[in-house]
Length: 259
View 1 (cartoon, helix red, strand yellow):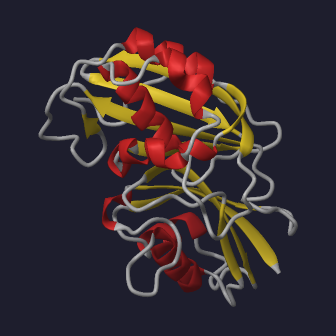
View 2 (tube, one colour):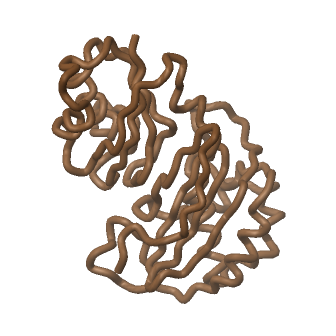
View 3 (cartoon, helix red, strand yellow):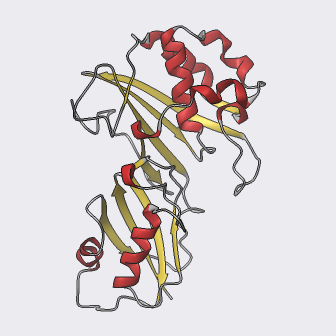
């Protein structure tokens, strides 16, 4: 079997998340359909990670195991993009070793969240408009307490498809103001279900003054029901980068959709 790595991006607004859906459309439905149009006997299409409904990706990685291209003389990148809807784009195609696994081989994931500090007619699908004034200094103090190895069960929802391990290393949280946007970037080897959105929601509540940064350590021993109401909406979240052994990521923190 051939194994191909696809690097892709997508706008998640119209999709019910990454995973294949029976009664709705997931991004995987579109990608698998394109792969079957381009490759013979497609056996497996696996992404580095799932994204929830309405969440976007600047960089998602997929491996495709198949019997090879149907038309070897054609450019598979162009053929895949011709078969995809306009809100999904493959940016790179490469043949990789048969044992390459997009999910298991990933050593890091980076998420970006965009918060709008004013109403915008152009970014409602890619950012969360927070009307209240936010104290970025207090949010930074909370970020420092969130970073490190903790049990993040209070910052996630139970995922029936994954193990119940909830202790992980949150490597870094970056905060930057860019014009009318406040940007948050989270980096870890892996994330729990809804974790990036719940971290964002909590930090926004700290910025509003409804939580104090000093309360953060106690939340690691708390009930997930405490923070569930503050889960940030999906439209501001992007899977920004998937990292593999040898990769580096030092991109400046900047907006996806400037306003």
